Amino acid sequence: MSPPQPLARITGTGRYLPDRVLTNADLERMVDTSDAWIRERTGIHERRIADDETDATVMGARAAEAALEKAGVRARELDAIIVTTATPDRFLPITSCEIQAAIGASRRCFAFDLQAACTGFLYALTMAEGQIAAGRAEKILIVSTEKMSTIVDWDDRATCILFGDGAGAVVVEPSANGEGILSSHHRSDGDLAELIRRQAGGARLPLTPERLRDREHMVQMAGPAVFKSAVRAMSRASLRVVRAAGWSAGEIDILVPHQANARIIESTARYARVPMERVFVNLHRYGNISSATIPVGLDEAVEDGRIRPGTNLLMTAFGAGLTWGAVAMRW
Ligand code: UT7
Image (cartoon, rainbow, N blue to C red; front, side, top):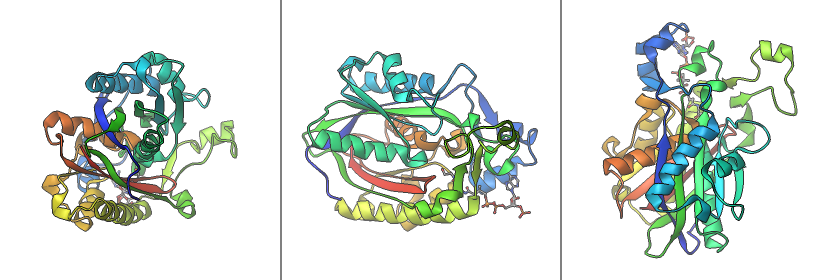
């Protein structure tokens, strides 16, 4: 889709990662796995785990404050806050309102949660872009905050090795000089809903002692099927937004993909024709932080100087739903 006007750009990034590191060696003591298997099949070496006091709101607020500071925007100037999370602190109130209060944003601001699993950040970016193009908001905060350690089954070796905790945030504002989001493409496929799910705890299967005992409220995933869909979806979405942005593959300066599995990232990059030296990877340090992977990656890439003014940035993600998408942006 071609970009609405004015373009929307990211003016500040921030992240928060808990201090506690859970290594593959630690996991060897918890489930029947090995450091060698995890490294070879996923690329993950370690992940961060938040303590009991550090919930989605706390992590999100820390990342948000860092992003606001870098953007030079005060919390009370915000027009909107969009929070993406698969681990809201409570079902009600929504986490975005909790973060609104935690960072001292004003009542003029509207806040809402957006649920698109690991693709949430890219969906939120496009929602923010639309608000800016419509002239309804000028300063929008997106916070992606995930305490995945509370929803993974620590006895299930197929999933517990993959995920970690953390938060990333960005400030989105209108741009006047041609930088910003050039194209985006989002899709979802409810026919594949059962591939990644949490069965119990919602309206259909409220929690009971039996369901809690059977861990039906934890993440269940058909890993290999998700793997195949992920590569196909992210590479096609990437090719589409690159074409719509008017770029050739050689003009992509950096690809910041969702960090779920090193083999997924490598295959996606190959199909999208981006050499690995232009792909941002921090999966080995953090594992899969669901929707927070891309904003955390952006903040690190900006800090490292890999993203600078004028950089052609490609982002792509997929997640439960299934949902997927890609965004091309000139920084
Ligand atoms: O953000 C979206 C979230 N989802 C994803 O990104 C998931 C995408 N999928 C994947 O990343 C991969 O499918 C996994 C990493 C989850 C699994 O890797 P795989 O290469 O697809 O393994 P598999 O499920 O086909 O299992 C191969 C073998 C099996 O043993 P057998 O049946 O061959 O004897 C599994 O039981 O590996 C075994 N296995 C493990 N072995 C050691 C599965 N998990 C583990 C483990 N340690 N942690």
